[in-house]
Image 1 (cartoon, rainbow, N blue to C red):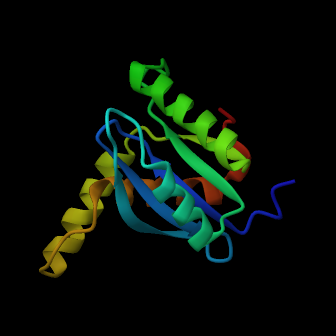
Image 2: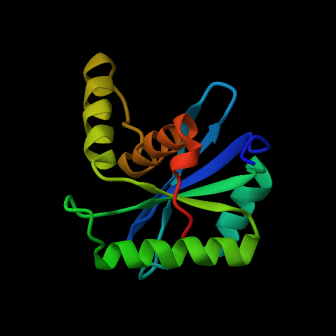
Length: 146
C-alpha cells in the first residue's frame, strides 16, 4: 500500500514555528527546508500549498508530541488538528510520527555540525522534521494516522 509513496513532506508542528523537511524513499533521507512562521498556531496555508506544488510529495508526515509516559498534551491535540487540516485541504495521506526527543537529537546534531564548520546553523525545527521524516521512511508502517 505504501510502495507508491516516493517522497514526503514532514512537519514538526509548533505554535510559533513549524519545521519543514522533504524526504525521499530511494535513499531514505530527508533535508530540512525553511521553517514556517505560525500565527497563533495557524500556518500560512498559501505557503504550504506552494511547498506542495514545488516538491510534489505523495504523503505528509506530522510529528506527534507525546509526553514521556505516552500521554498526549495540548500540543498533541493541536498537532492532530493541524494534520487533519492538511489532509482536508490537500487530500494527501497524512501520517503522524512520535516525535519525542527529535528536538534534542536535532540540537545534538546541529551542535556537532557547528563544531566542524562555522556559519549559520540550519533551523532546529526543520532539522527535527528531517530526523522525524527519516524515522518514518525507515519504518513507514509505524506511522499513526491522525
